[in-house]
Image (cartoon, rainbow, N blue to C red; front, side, top):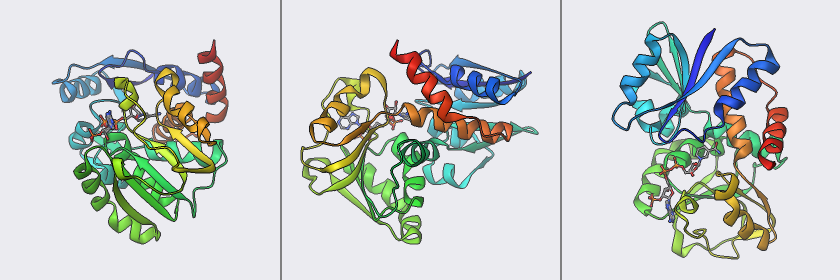
Length: 276
Ligand code: NAP
């Protein structure tokens, strides 16, 4: 049986084993997918140990996504641009890195939520690993503009500078703003910060969302509640990151198995499971 896993620290909360087990069952693929808690200084060693055990690939979560891209022999274009990877494939003794976070987010917004991003004004909050993973695929959806705002402005500047050529190619205006100075009128606001994990308020002033806009938090469950409530109070449609989680897993499954799993069905099942 082909072996896969998710590596992270912490990793206990991860829904990836459940999601991949459902994908495998529904698409008739024989595989086993586990989770591995990795000590902070042991990521490379654990990857090589997993390969030695016959592992075919792994997902990578916090805090190892940057290290995963650096460890790989080869990176896909989207992992190179993000400088971060959430999906490693082991083939003939080489480590291939990809990043499916952005495709997962765009697929959830466009396919599952039915919101076309082309021509829209987007606000991306955050400039950490998750924001780095989603900015390229968001640009490729050809919105009219993407404004990136981060607590540490310099980090946003570095991220945006790296994406300038892609933005020009897609004819999307790419801007940096200070969180504190944010003004404007956005169609889609994406929260890729981890502020609520630390119990802190949503880092956005009121009045940024056009009525009927979409407010999307990459988090899900209790951690997303504050942002979703804020969005509702502004008259926006609110969506958490559970769909992104399932869709990024579906992209990884496609890379590994060559089969696109029924992600919408698995998302419905997971939502039902978590609501009990
Ligand atoms: P990260 O690399 O640690 O980055 C954290 C980001 O949050 C940085 O931009 C940081 O700003 C900002 N931040 C932290 N505390 C803040 C506060 N109090 N006020 C304002 N900004 C604050 O983390 P990450 O990997 O990007 O992950 C971000 C979130 O996305 C995590 O909660 C993760 O669970 C979620 N995520 C979800 C999915 C999914 O499939 N649904 C996939 C990936 C990630 P500074 O630069 O100033 O520190």
